[in-house]
Image (cartoon, rainbow, N blue to C red; front, side, top):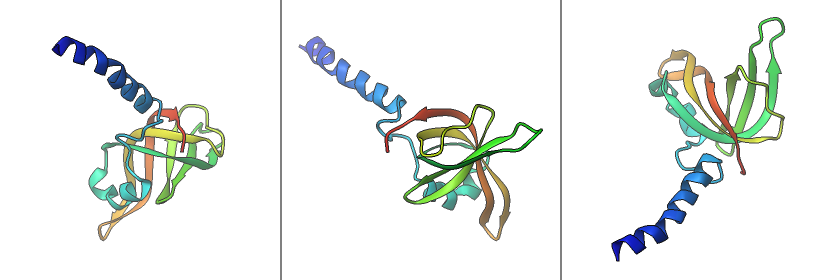
Length: 122
């Protein structure tokens, strides 16, 4: 009896992992506003956020690429070595959080150094 229960749950569990990995289910993502608020304590830690690309740019001659990701709670910059995503594209992004400075407990210049990126539905 236990074996049948396991076999009937296996496709559901596999589906959850598949949809989470594709960014269709936002498990493990934090709202951008929450990441910004907690930025001083998240310095150097990996965070996972979900949002829409609203701006992108590349510094000439340096190869540094960055784009702005936005959700309903805020926005932040993401740096990448990969090609830039299209403006309007919805993504789930994971990467290391960095603060340019922390003054009086508030972070300035928050950015994520991208380690992975998945297309998502928002």
